[in-house]
Length: 280
Image (cartoon, rainbow, N blue to C red; front, side):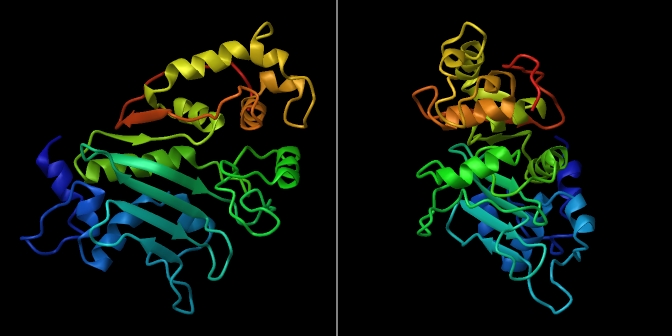
């Protein structure tokens, strides 16, 4: 990557000639607070600003900050929460990124919520205990409501369908730091399929994804388990990415969906497909 391509994009962040350009999350976190803010806001999809009439500095008309950043010096992880209005319970954009062992960008979690849509309490038990998006605990009644409303596992609200914009933002962020790729760990089966369709490849987990697809074929072991015994295990789940994901989240495969790592090469599409042509 030409040096001028990288350094030119820092002109509105660094004004001094002696500033060292960071290449990792850990290095960004050692920078002054306002500089960190300018860098991490590059991860906000561009349409978010116009959709919610947000100012570029992300303060509302009363001067209240709509952006929460947790990126202390000495840490190699950064957490960002952007709210469309001050005091709203859920961020419109939430993300966690860190460094891989060799200094690459690794997306741990990235969520875009439609704050105007109905909320489903899949993230907490009735007593308030966090469920970790249903991975640690499950609020089954809330999950059933979310399923029936057309949401996927882990979703508390409908999304905004900005995946392509989010990928563009992360590609630009990776370029800014001098990288030609970035990594992500899909939390659920449907996340992996969405990332496939956005041009990601697999570092690990492709064989698992292909095994799952075979299992949902008419004579597959997973299809045979779609016996209607729970709302998440209906026969039609075999033909839907979203419903497959719910069935797997419900324990259909007798193992958690994990140990899948994907990556996106900047400016390139992997053209990988581990599923048959299924609807959402």
